[in-house]
Length: 237
Image 1 (tube, rainbow, N blue to C red):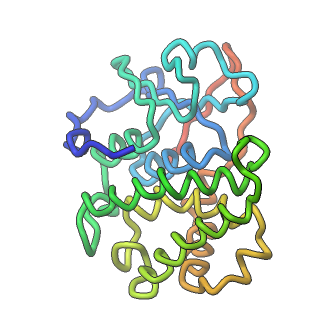
Image 2: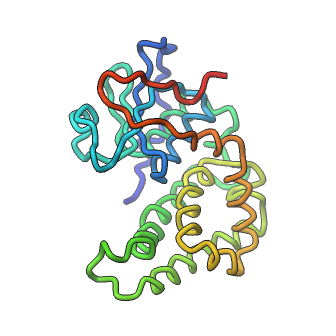
């Protein structure tokens, strides 16, 4: 689905949230959409009350504010609800963007969102059918979707042959938005992935997965139920 540039305009900054008025983040540790949201919230130091979701038993509180019932969901103190991972990333970075994720070294924000669209559209289509072929009646050979995904990855590899990151030598919105999905594709058959001629993409992926930022957003939390204490995410400095 195309990303509307209208939603990229900076939001009005929120008043500084106190512990009892933090945004509430419904998340699931392994969901790539939730990962990308947590990456942006973490780098921007936008603290939230974290509610870890069990996908087979989603809390009624989340479904009430977001009937589509998919993570991540961010409820702001004023009551506004952000239901899409990229909207959460853009909201967080519009509040505070210390590493200039919205201003890439090369290219533009529009070019980054175009790349993210391709990830969330064609690449995610093939990733799902490669990783979960039993969920799709039309999939007779998952390797066909692996090959289609691989073709997209070769283009990313070519892009990364020129610079350390996708839009220059420093991390941008595009890197954080894509890395959880590339991780999921790679981990579907790690031996196969590691044997492919994708040296620059493999280097890029390994660097992100080993970074303190990524390790920090993968901390395990117990499933949340109404009445439970809510950990603050990211951890206060």
